[in-house]
Length: 456
Image (cartoon, rainbow, N blue to C red; front, side, top):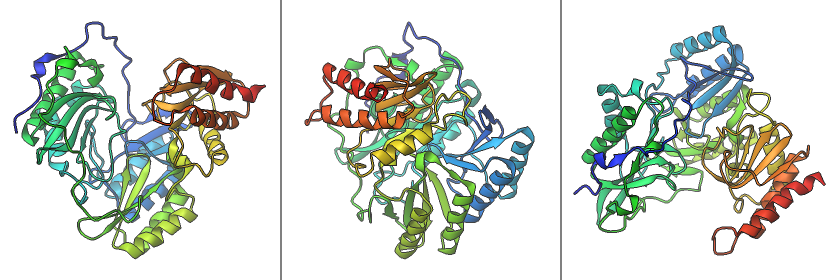
């Protein structure tokens, strides 16, 4: 297939680019200090862990940390509440459990890659080649710590919401598989740069990463911009992004795999649970013949079950333990740990989010995206949300259709912040045009009034 992308030399840094503070990501060998101690993050190199290994992680988190277990939006495990000594002991337990940990620049793929009958193409070979290319070119130490790559095969586990510096997604053009390339954002906001066959896609992705590295250790994909985006050549025909014909999903939370096993998806409420609860679920998974549990994007877990009956039984156990196993208001709400777990948090975000979810119960299918953030960093959801509430010294600040860093339209000092969020969401739903178009300017004022009403 002929490449439909302008040469990488045509992608340059904007003349007035403003350097951003260098970020950092917590890791097993580089914990991050937070309000409740050190935070450790790990991604299994194989994609998943056995139930026994997950139980071992939970037991170690109870012995050495505060027993909080999280799954991030990108699908990594996080453990909280360590000091220097206990973090080292936890790392020793990880090694003793035989869990290899992924290192280097994250190159994210679906946790079902290569086993999903709905995939347009298996992303794993491309992801492996990009990882190898980063290592062989010595790019890892020259790139910003939060640089990431997404390679999406177009299967049932969408990676569209993940922000990445370089994105590749399988599409079909004139019956052929191609890889759509974009830089600097999630699927909705990244800058598209055309389509390639697999070999060229790998080469161009590595060239872009090299260009980012050349700009310096603070540079990100968003710092690259086409000289004239409107002049960028597009595909000869519109890509068909429909998945391959495959057996229908049993439901939105269970997927038949190519080897006749069944993947059961569950979600952690706001991405968090206790080590005791997760260990109990892992033990039940072991009893039902599960051999592999994989952290998944959007703060979930995938249990690879031997068949339909075991997936149904394990799903019932998960529901009884408080995990999300179907339509649930909480899936529309992103909430970081907040105060007091995070030193930067100004509000108890997850308590607020839980109460707001209770007030909005029964409307899971119609809720807009909601983000409750302890501060302006927006760790739980870097992308824009319909309703964003940011913790400030006096209470909460409201942003409509924006990120945590956008200018707020209203503030509240109310102790009933959850009620204010619920009222604001209902106002947003009333104001949203039936045709799905953008909100008129006057609607923002009415939505802001609903948020502030709780203080009157």
